[in-house]
Amino acid sequence: MFLTETKRFHFLLLLIILHSEVEQAYAVWPMPQQMSQSTDRYPINPQLLAFSYARDSAAQSGCSVLDAAFERYFNLIFPDFVGGTGLSNIWSEPKPFTVSVKVKNGECDGFPDEGSNESYNLSVSAGQAVLKAESVWGALRGLESFSQLVYQDDYNLYFVNKTEIEDFPRFQFRGLLLDTSRHYLPMPAILKTLDAMAYSKFNVFHWHIVDDPSFPYQSRNYPDLSSKGAFHPMTHIYTQSDVKRVIYHARLRGIRVVPEFDSPGHTQSWGKGQPDLLTSCYKGKVPSGTFGPVNPTLSSTYQFLNGLFKEVTSVFPDSYLHLGGDEVDFTCWRSNPNVQAFMAKMGFGSDYTKLESYYMENIVNITAALNKTSIVWQDVFDYRERIPMDTVLEIWKGVPADYRAELGRITLAGYRVLLSAPWYINHISYGQDWRNAYTVQPQNFSGTEQQKKLVIGGEVCMWGEYVDATNLTPRLWPRASAAAERLWSDEEKTSSVDKAFPRLEDFRCTLIRRGIQAEPLFVGHCKHEYSGL
Image (cartoon, rainbow, N blue to C red; front, side):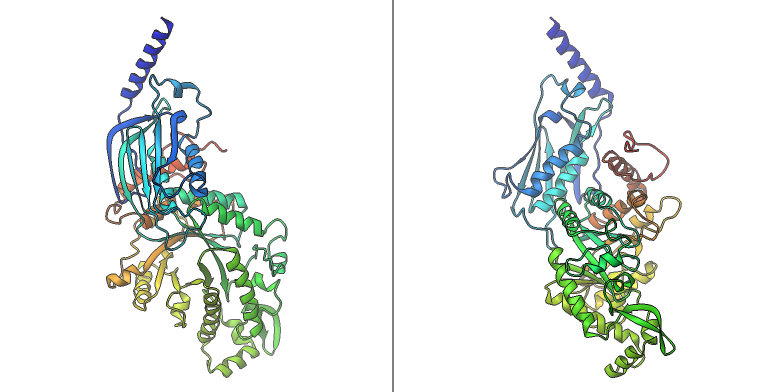
């Protein structure tokens, strides 16, 4: 008798729950290329959900990337599940739910690269979700989408709606830059950023690891660079094991790590640990005691850079290396009599852009010999420097009219290009400035379709003059997610900021639930507010 009453109670409670909430479909950020949903929804019991490999999947148990992802996404989908107590046990007829993953290319031990296929198909129906992808990297993107589809009702029961998704990224390069020189960012801040990047389907971490203020990268072959150039030689450095940890953490989330060693400018910290690397500035006929950019006239400069880049390219597995090349102040070069003599010898006259060109051409050739593709800032193109055609140029200057004109010029010359100028989100303003990032049109410039195909993506930049671990996360998120959707999704389907607002608001709450201190978009609340304070 008691058992019958208990079952009746569970049945009535379930009916109340199912009818008390309006059936609803939940969105995915960034918006998939094709997505259809119905109001049909299926309950999911955390105790009965299982991730599995399809029998005909090329990847099977033991695939490091997907094994780790299955565990990670279970915890993301069920953040408050602690072993199955309370309402999660009221099902009168518990039904299993299986997420079946099929991958055509079973490569699991490598790293994501510029040719990685991130496409996937996801079909959610009663009792199962079927995820199909060309590669493990596409499977990761599909798992992220599935995780966003699962939701809780007011009674904390889990559901997912019937859904069909066909998805792939619009651009192959969707990056985020962190500056760890102007302020040192501790490892947990970097790793948390990588987690949040994966939630928004970013796939490149551009690590602006050194600059004028400090040199935190601990080199194996040139240890004085960090011991003398970092803010502190023990506490404010990235050891070789730290770097490997970042690369490994990123790999498991389908994120490439592209380091930047910017020169010949932005190198004041380098000179502290590498004598004679920087140009000695003169006041009249005597040295002033100050130093300028890297000295491009000495053979020792290129011997050092060859050694440093050889090490860096052995540590960072990605095929890209960012060489910088921006904002070079010629004042010191002009003052130095040895540089003046070199200019005369080379026939450069008084055009110091030719001297910078000479330097950049040399270091690009060094990286090419190391079988790496160089990324450089737009200044290198603007100074008409002779660089290989496979070099990628990054636009960082100007208002829309300026960067659109630059897009046209660079692509007309046949170079691939990245756009970051409109996504310097270290610049802040009162109000909903995410809308500016959202309305960027990376291919809206005068040029042929072939030129527009040379725009391979873009990146969000978080420069560190006023940013450290105390404010990094809320300044990044969810504003960076606006750019993420622009780089992933179909532009026509995501043209309305007003339609995007409630979706981004929901996604911001997802970030909060996952421990990301994403700042508010406007007045309102999340069902689960940030609990880490």
